Length: 328
Image 1 (tube, rainbow, N blue to C red):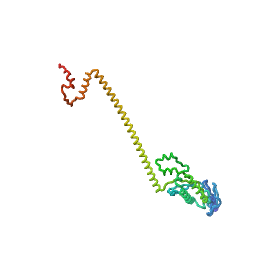
Image 2: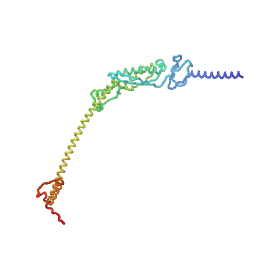
Image 3: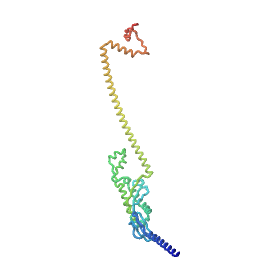
Image 4: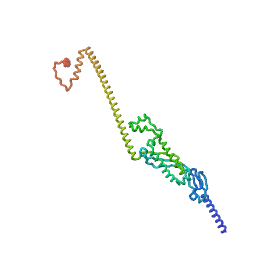
């Protein structure tokens, strides 16, 4: 009884171990390639067969062969900003970026081994090509497009532009930035097939003056803006003086005209008053004389006024004729 049980247990263990061995063997002999991957099978470190780019399940010799995987998607390269002198000896900082892909994984493996090695090789090739082209190109060709144009009307709107600045602005662009980038791309692409790489495109992300040159450019820009500001202030002061002079002239004309009209109205009023006085005097000369005398009393006599005249003066003749009221 015990012997049968032991035999059965041994059989189960053997079957389980066999099943595990089959699973391990199957796992070691199969591999899956993703749609974004491509692979090369290595046997004792040497490539075997053609690169595998078809996604799905594949087989290899277990424990002897290994699979080296490579990305099929677009990869990015981002170079470090480099200080490069242009043909006009103007030092600028150029920051570039590019996109690339692995198109020949076998040659890629043999030449640069992995993506890190590819990045280092791209650094050498692209930095060298960019430096060669930038150093043989004028700054205006680097920053402008080929179809960039400026008209005389646009130039007139640039206040206080010097002759040198006008000549610089009117300089015709022969190549332009996009054509420069295309030339860099074509030159760099010629060196990529030996590494199993396809260079898809390259772009100049940023162009700046280096720090010491940038400071001088900023100082020149500040001085130019200050000169323009002084010119604007001078023109504004001139315009203000013209406006103030015109205002003073108009004010003098309006004041003179108002004074003339006032004198005319005053003269007409005096004439009218004189006519009224004459009419009143002609209607009753005695009453008019009496009324005018009373007006003079109210204006000349007061509490603090002392008047020394002869008692027989005509000034008081109406007062002398006033009869005293009768006593009750």
